[in-house]
Image 1 (cartoon, rainbow, N blue to C red):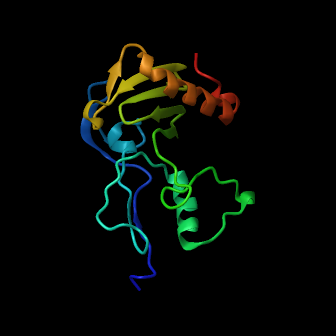
Image 2: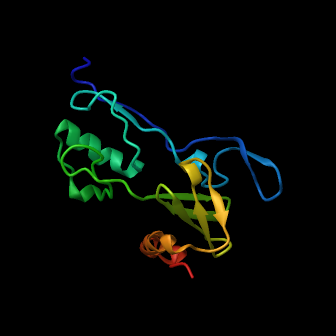
Length: 173
């Protein structure tokens, strides 16, 4: 069985355990309130035939890439009619994860985050405002007062993504 089984452990989001204070000064618990690192940086563990044992890869991955990765690994062709956006994470044609996009849409306050290992640009639809983040050490986010030159590529990716989403996701000012 172990020679034929692909095991994947991941989650669609993490959980806040009171690490951050919200604008009202209260600790946030659970998920759905923001796109902080503890919510968007979740582990992805893959084991099975053809997967190197003990290898750690710290590149960014997105759940949208998991379906194409599994299909390719088991030798099933993806049907273009499915309209999947993802790319394989391992094997031939694997993508190198340098940026990731996260969406949060609840309670009438949609937020989209585009990030790399060090920086992020977050669009708050309700406030119609972009926020600029840095990730010192990769674990915690620090809000910056203004964009740094290095944010420009992430901002362009965010604008293109929001434009593709349609009218509610128009490009950021």
